[in-house]
Image (tube, rainbow, N blue to C red; front, side, top):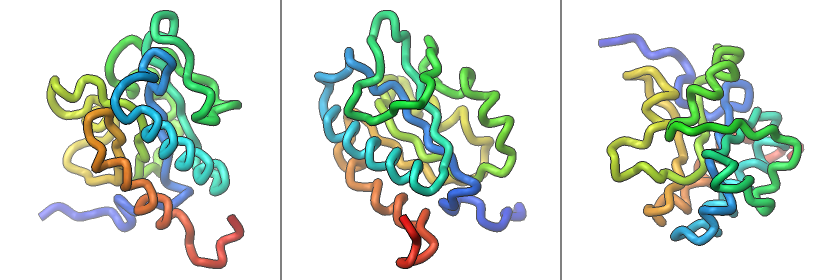
Length: 161
């Protein structure tokens, strides 16, 4: 049996990162888009309050447009990409944070019909577990998960945020 690193998979501000993937104008009319953006915007607000870094990507922004304003991602520099996974373009960000144990992933899972969600399988080495609230356009059940991932970021009810 392999040893498990202490804290692996726990959502802790100092060892977590928020990925915001491809919430762009061209996708505005996809199923559940308003709900996905609403949950992602709340996740981003909590991340900012707690000092959790956030990374924003845009899939082919020249053709699919910018990130929607209601996400509230002002101040985040979007990383443009053309592959389905966001990992290759943000690998430098990941390399700078060797302490990462949890990745919070919000966005559209457009290639879901091609198999496992691409960013999930690229970002974390197998077989290490992690926490990934993955919000997809075809899965309304996932839209209610965000509180279960936000709450553990607070250390107690007396947390200043």
